[in-house]
Amino acid sequence: QLQLVESGGGLVQPGGSLTLSCAASGFTLDDYAVGWFRQAPGKEREGLPCIGSNGDISNYGDSVKGRFTVSRDNAKNTVYLHMNSLKPDDTAIYYCAAALYYCFRTVYRDDWNYWGQGTHVTVSS
Image 1 (cartoon, rainbow, N blue to C red):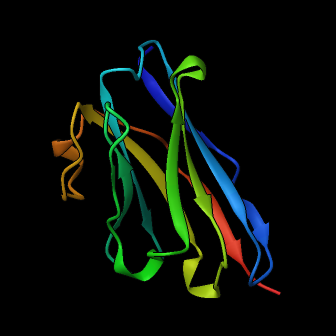
Image 2: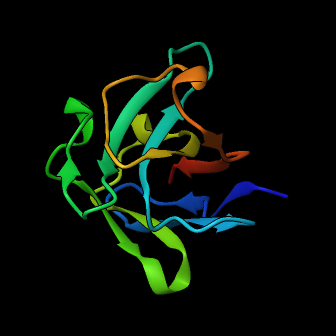
């Protein structure tokens, strides 16, 4: 089965750090850009940093600039979202999605080839 699986979510205190993983199953991520997204209750889906198949990073998401970054390890078929200086407003379900080669600024599900099921992140003391 071709799918993406996110992991690494959980409860973290404000100011803390967390790294999420997005692992591909049934296909290789080498030719895919992988973007991260989040959605909090009652809010629209928000685009976060994305990494292209060539490793170029697009820093989408004004609210997370300077705090979140993305990396990939093709040998592990996994992309990571590194989150620092977390705030309560970062509480959301976090998703990864894959599309061939390039990152692009769209949050619509149909524009991406694969989506993960999401992982919960709660930032609270």
